[in-house]
Every structure is written in structure tokens, then in C-alpha cells.
Image 1 (spheres, rainbow, N blue to C red):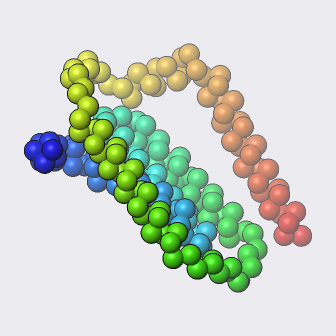
Image 2 (image 1 turned 120 degrees about the vertical axis):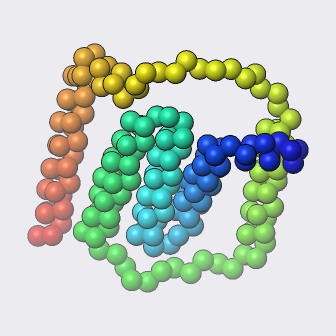
Length: 175
């Protein structure tokens, strides 16, 4: 089992995948556990950026760039603007003291990790090679602007209407 781990970590792509996966999982866990909304948004942005790193490792560069532009950039900024435009109470509710709760959560998570790790190590998968695409970004662009141009334009109109609606709602609450 240790030889499988050392063989896995001997490849740079696998190490990058492992680091990006840990950052994505860590960001998701932090997002759930933080109590301040701004910290939650930053943890969510970390998850989005690490997912973009996973896409780069998987040779989907276009999806990685879109992930950073749309999710890590636009949605995170939109969430922060939404937080800044709304009023929040200053007091934070105290969570009841449950000493067994965190211990049981840790034991359950470690058990699940161990079970998944054992299943991955004992499973025999067939190896194969996928054909290398010449340029996946070019193919996506051809498909997007030839076959799917109407849904693309409808989505841009929908996003513009949603943005204008958010501004109108924010202005009404201000008055």
C-alpha cells in the first residue's frame, strides 16, 4: 500500500492534483465552519481557484479560465457587494458546548476517509489512453459560436437583466 502511494506521488501532475484537491476540500470545509460571511466568501473563492487548478491538471485550460473569471472573480465579488449592501446585526449567537460532537465528527470523517482510501487502493482499474485533442479551446469556440449561439446570447441577456434587477432592489432598500 505504501508503494502505491510513493508511486502516485512520484509524478508531478499527481502531486499538483493532490494539493489542489486538498485546497478545494479545505476551502469547502472552512466555508461551512466560518461564522463571518466575508470569511465564508473568501473560503469559497479559495475552493473555486483550486478547482481551476484541478482543471489545469486535467488539461481543460478553457474551463479553468472560465472557472476563475466567472466563479472566483464575478460571483465572489457579487457576494461581497451583496454583503456590503445589506445590514447585519453585530451580535453573534453562541453555539452550545457539545464536547462529543466534534470528536464524533472527526472519528466519522477519519473512518470515511479510511474506507475510501482502502477501496481506492484495492480496486483494479483498466489503464488506457485517451486520444489527444489538438486544441480544446478552439473546438469549444467553434461549438459555442456556431451551434449554441442563441443560448449563449440568451444567457448574456439573462445575466444583464439579473444585474439590473439587483441594482434596482438595492436602490429601493436604500431609500
